[in-house]
Image (cartoon, rainbow, N blue to C red; front, side):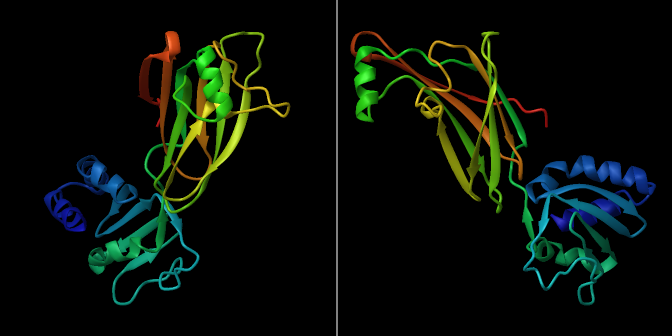
Length: 236
């Protein structure tokens, strides 16, 4: 990737620094994102590039603001300053960061609905098993940091107030969150059946990926079943 960056700097050598940066950011946007990098700025032979992550506290070999060896790389918490011969070491330097995960901090799923259970499904639910109607959220955290998430539930019924529920997702882990299992202190469901709702999930510590799914069963003995899934919308 950094050889491509050097080639790009050479390709656009005729341009001014600002145009050079714009062209490189456009050309390498996907590659930067895959490596945990943001946008870069160019000043002569120097670049400053944002790192989407945090510098690890145990990175003794790369303390903030220190030039490494003979190369000219200065490592800061949010960014790298690269001068001249430092490009070949950039991959190694990035290992000093806990990079942000894939996805976004905010996800919205506007369509939520859990149908009432049939008599058979009620038996299954009481026994703790069975294939019955419910919704769930899958939250994937690909970063090296755990994250605190909030689930906000909004109701179509104006008589119902929205509520917020918090949960954690560990680093490098996915969480499949059953929404029919959310209970109030008295044991009643926080999300009633046959009640149209919308969901907003916010990850406070790192971007995540959110997918919503719905299982709907119906008919005598719940012999008809369907499964639907949708990626959430994100403003990112």
